Image 1 (spheres, rainbow, N blue to C red):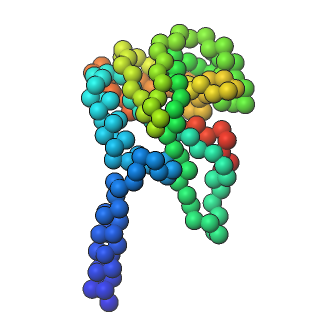
Image 2: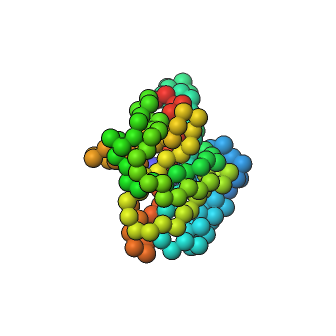
Image 3: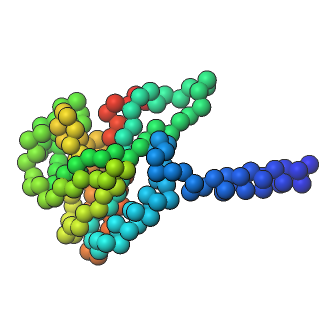
Length: 172
């Protein structure tokens, strides 16, 4: 019996590994495919210090259901990313908890992602807040313990990698 289970596990592992990395760039699964991973790595190689990452979109009913298998709904999207000096919640006007206007810190840079949501931007060492441009304002849904909006730190000679999830149209 142990031999049978071991053989079944080997077969399962072989099947899983043969599917890895074969998704196409047009897939709607939202996972980073081999070409996209390479693109992010190439972007990282082109900047010596700053932020690189991916902007992902998720929407719809994300509640688990015993009748429906879980689906991956995140997908990369093209957006403008705004990078401000580290911004606290008391330095903005906020609507619906995630849309921000009247930001009182300095805009440092902005970058447009590619169609898959990938971006890279060279920055000086420091602490920054990231926002994406949405219809209702600049979006950021992540806070640290001090209520800083989507904080990202860039250290000397390093590239910080982030994943920014836009999920205001998702239900959990």
